Image 1 (cartoon, helix red, strand yellow):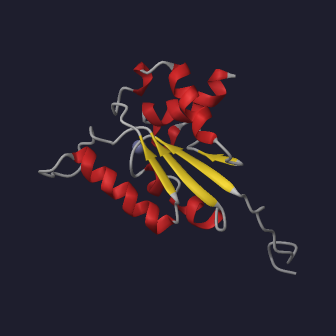
Image 2 (cartoon, protein in one colour; image 1 turned 90 degrees about the horizontal axis):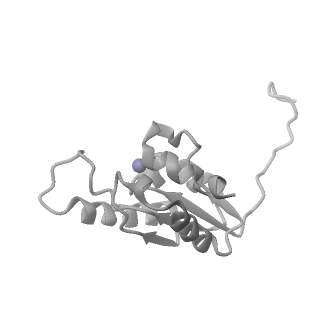
Amino acid sequence: MSALGSPERRELPLLGEVLVVCTHPDDESFGLGAVIALVTRGSRVRVLCLTHGEASTLGNNSRSLGQVRAEEITAAADVLGVEDVKLFSYPEGHLPDVPLDELGDLLDTGVGAAEALLVFDEGGVSGHPDHRLVASTRSRRR
Ligand SMILES: [Zn+2]
């Protein structure tokens, strides 16, 4: 017996399909990347990202930041084993202005055949208002 109790190894159930919902390109990596890479092995993983992250003040690129971040989420998806990325063009920083039913309908449609939904907790990890809104959208519509 190990110091942690039973030597029995516990495995998470294999999920057929998982939908990751995030607000900005990079959320899938910094906030949820480890879960995507480790917990969803063997699952079909899709990412639905609501903005291009064009309002970030990080970096100093001559190209459109939204375009750069679109390329980055595609590259991250390849590394994480994500099969599909849907990147929407809602304006970063203004998601609270989008009608809740519109976002809820988008998420309901995006769920499709997913058996699990992977989002930030309701604190939004960093407290960013867009993160918090997306994390709570489905529960707020019920
Ligand atoms: Zn973010």
